[in-house]
Image (cartoon, rainbow, N blue to C red; front, side, top):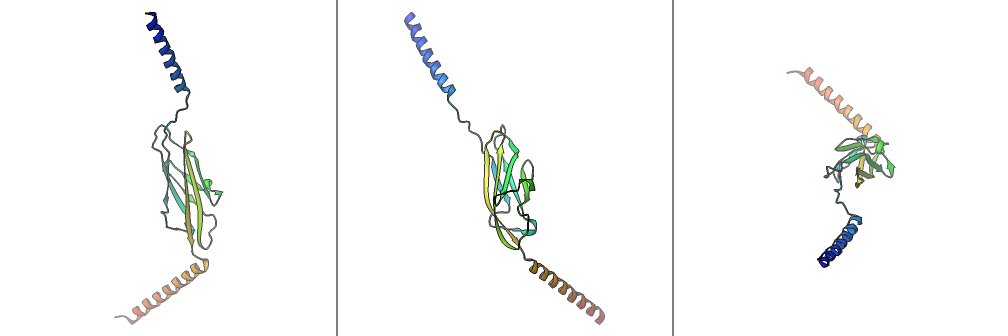
Length: 163
């Protein structure tokens, strides 16, 4: 009997040593990476210069690891613009351009959001802003006024000529 008990004891020691090795090994917990997308503007579409706003949407698949909304960061052309964005549970939106410059301008937009456990999602995009020149705006205003004067004059002539 003592031979069997000795063998059981040796197996127990081996199993315990293997179990302690497994317990000490770091385990990789599979965590869902949050999803971060640029929902406006869509790729290939430029935003108007007078309202250069972008919208990000984000979500996480892991209910046990919710998003940390305080971790949302956005830089535009290397400048932190996070304070210009409104952040809610599902989306963030704000202006990417402070000064409106005439013409077509591309901006390097980088956004990042993390979960409570520190799993982050990053997004890099190029957003184009299209702004009409001030001369073109004033020219279009002058043209619209002239067309209105012509329309009013024609209406007055129709009424004077009558049926």
